[in-house]
Structures are given as C-alpha cells and as structure tokens.
Length: 288
Image 1 (cartoon, rainbow, N blue to C red):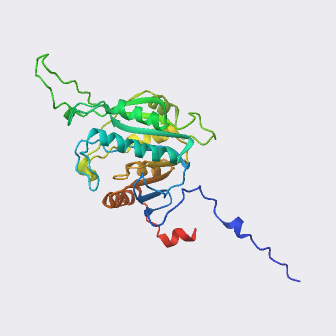
Image 2 (image 1 turned 135 degrees about the horizontal axis):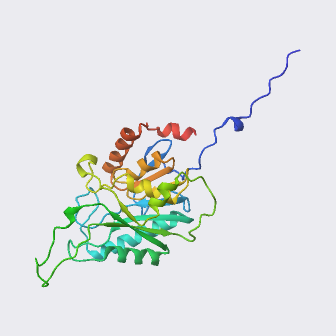
Image 3 (image 1 turned 45 degrees about the vertical axis):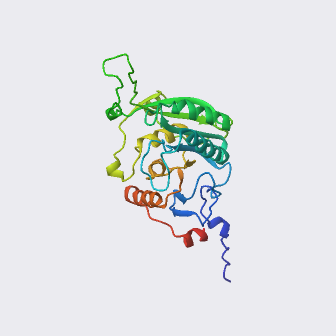
C-alpha cells in the first residue's frame, strides 16, 4: 500500500518578506528587491502609505538658482519657505510615530540676500509637528564657498561665510524606538558618528551628472546611526539616487520620490551600475 504524500501548504512555501510601502503602480518608475523609485510629487503623492517610514534622509533644493529640470530653484524666499512647509508636512504624515528625519540643508546663504536657512527651516519643521533632537555640522571642506568677502580688510561691510552644511535631526512623536531591531554599527563607528561634527568631502557634479549631489557617506552615516537593519528609508528628493544606494549597501528598504523623470532615470541607472542590481518588471511585482 502506497503512502500518501503530505501536501505542502502554499503558505509555508512562501518566502517571508520585509513589509513594503504600499505601491501605486501608476507612479512607480523603478523597483528592485531593496528600493522603490516613484516619479511623483512628494507634496501630492499617495504612492506611500501614511505612517510607514522609519527614517527620512534628504537634501532638498536650496533655492540658490541651481539649474534643475522641472523645479524652479529661484523663487522668492517667502515662497521657498511656503514650499518647504508643504513638503515637510507631507513627510510628517508618512513617518511612523517614532520616525526620524535627517535634513541636510545649508547653515545660511548669501545668494540673493543673506538668509538664516537652517534656523528658518528648523522653525517651520517644529511648527509642522516635528520635534528637534540635534544638529550635526558637516565640514565638507569646500573652500570655494569663500567667494564673497564683502569689504576687503575693512569693517565697512565684511561677510562671514562658514564653509559647512548642517544635518538637522528631527523626530515625529517620540525619540526612542518603539520596537527594537538589529543594529549594524560597531563601537568605533558609533563613537565617531555621535560626534556632532562630521568631516568628509562632498561629491562631484561632473562624476554623478546631477547639479547638486551629496556623497553616499552622508546618508550611510545617518542610516547606520538612526535606523535598524531592514527599516524603510525615504528620500523625498531622490535626485541621483544617493540615499537609495546607501540603503542597498546597509540592507535597508529605500523609497525615493522625484518629480523629474530624468532624475528618476539617472537614479535607476546609477543604482544598477553601482549596486549590481536589476529592475523588476511591473508584471513580476504584481505576482508577488
């Protein structure tokens, strides 16, 4: 008498997967096992579920007349701050209650008039609901920032210019993570990154092909220090895809949004080249 084979449950055979942000197939531009890119406007997007993001790492436009594609980087400072409030509000909605935010912005700017950019944006973020945690000074050793001296060797009207940028660290409702996860940061690195002055070089515009890239080292440090392995990281201005590359290299899930299709394409090509990954078709995504 033949023994009956036990039927293997389909549920058991299914691979356990990391939870994903909700997908709007109309706006998804590229996907692989670790990252999603949406050709969308972060202010209007419904491509990502509310309360699904563990950490946001981004560097928004600085409003210093950089020649982007669709985005106007030369609006009035009043309109720039209004735009800032809108996208900070959208990010607040998408973050988890213990979600964190690493915001790379200039300390100040003098193009088109002196403005206290860091102070103004931090104030707006707090009004939106974000809580302030700390500020990291990024010494990118960019001597070219010292181009405006004002009155040379005179007290008449000198300019003081700090060749640094900042990373403002914020959180939504509580700083301590609700659930424990796996940290992948070693002692030496932890001691280095908890020092609030980071020194490393910026990125080459020519090498990346984007007018304002930041180096992978910046999001890598933020991701390692402020998130667990497997967490979901958002960059609402994905640009050349730097944050998503850092996500792949640190074993996180990366979500990038950009209103400009050409930058989505740039990010996709760079991810495929630098991370040796391939694109999943929408048909293959739907089967999962």
